[in-house]
Length: 78
Image (cartoon, rainbow, N blue to C red; front, side):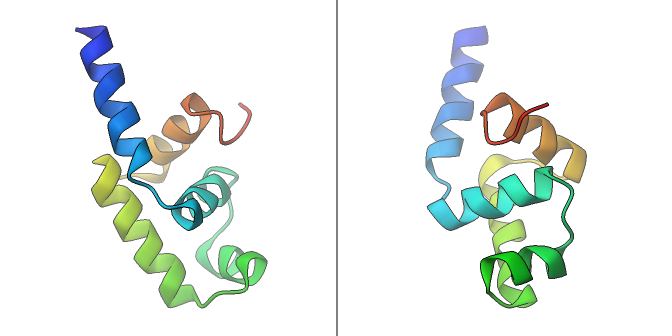
């Protein structure tokens, strides 16, 4: 069963665009939407759209869940 779940998580992760992975990494680093927008030189509306897409694609709801996921995937260090 662990392998099936792992496969599902990898499949969901592969659906993230490179920009969504960047946004996820910055969320996991604790940055707020405005900070992410400034760092990536995009609008806050675009950041919020990426947040919604990430949550939808990964099936995760909270920043804590997104952070744990990013750590597991090696996007950020614990």
